[in-house]
Length: 76
Image 1 (tube, rainbow, N blue to C red):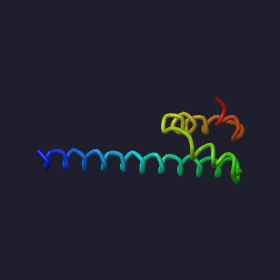
Image 2 (spheres, rainbow, N blue to C red; image 1 turned 120 degrees about the vertical axis):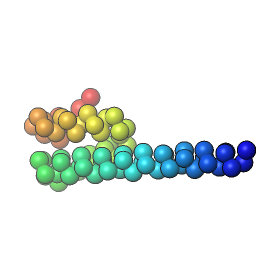
Image 3 (cartoon, rainbow, N blue to C red; image 1 turned 120 degrees about the horizontal axis):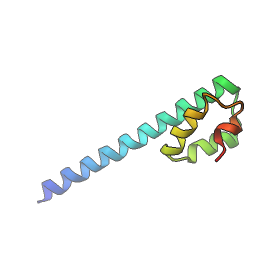
Image 4 (cartoon, one colour; image 1 turned 30 degrees about the vertical axis):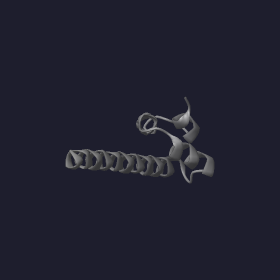
């Protein structure tokens, strides 16, 4: 029983770590896209991105393609 519980805990830990790493990568790519398109990012923009959910990051990453400014990407 103990081995099963530890195995499950380990799997959950690995899955959580993978999710965090994926989110970190998404944020890094979004910031690179924004900087490439619009120039250096303000601390406020960086903080907003760091605090956003993965779902929001994905939405913003798509908006980069058609937005005319950083604020347009991050609105809503």
